[in-house]
Image 1 (tube, rainbow, N blue to C red):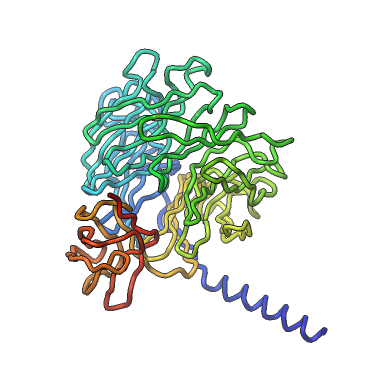
Image 2 (image 1 turned 120 degrees about the vertical axis):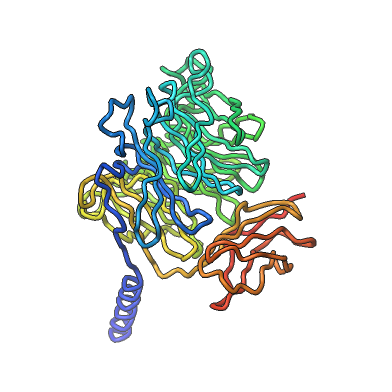
Length: 472
């Protein structure tokens, strides 16, 4: 029995060594202020294969008297070559916006859309920017009396199947229940027509964060504060604006169920949503939770000392979730972790300041299989970093959008797509065009059904990271 135990221990140790050896962390870029600072927003992979992001401070206009911080929009290659595309506060009074705090989103036409927390009428903006850096301000918040249209957007936009963008603001709205307003959910067209869908009144939440479009066609999100228990909420909202509060945090004694969620949700293949609460839990440093579409919440893990998860989880191609904490780890500068759907958590990387610190943005899994992210502080100059993390996951393809009718146009993002010989939608062949090594264009073929999109290349078959939903 003793020999067996030793053999088992050795096998476990060997498995750990092999797992760690397959893991590679790399700092791709250290900001220096002139090219940006405080990289709170995360990254998005564009159709050209590059990554795009924003910084909340720094840039060419950082020495000006910005109403808020100035900030930038940048492009970075997977090898780490960074190009500053736009510096905010380039217009008088920062009418073009200032201090972007949310990741960008790319539409099927190739343009990128985002928000600034400040600038404009001092309430922030929604903007469009081309991959080459031409910026257009689509909407300026606080354009209506009392900022009833919203104030201070700081969460990523999400595009619906109708092409419109949906988002939230931290403040503003029609309710006076919160000082400065409790925040709103809004819809905006790609040409800039904004509709306020819901104004929070604290009982249903206060300070709403990122939305996620679910497979049922509705949007789900979190509010950092408010609710019947004061610890924030999880809510559902229809595209027309009917909101339902699904869960109130601090519903358990001592807020062991979590409190004050800052991050958005991600929907898994089981239909449930997964997210994080920044505070509360068994130890008071935040939680990872699962919640059903009807609102039944299960706490999967409670972080130890100084965890404080602030970023939305990403569902990776291995079926696990990956995320970051803004604090904790050996140096106290934050961590990258993996957690299984059943709640087994593994710390993958501990930041030490030189490679970044205080990570608050979601990771993105590139179609090459690696994760990429940003840290708002640390690095060679103390102004933040862009980094990559490989855990041995293989390449895949990603569709834009992830659902559509038969005949609708679809972009397929990937790596090394040159020479592709086949594209199928759940087994149904499609006519396609290889545009570049990172992009294929196609249409949903007649007879296609919901399922995995597969691309056959000279190096093998690549599968989509999520099932493509064929709609009527």
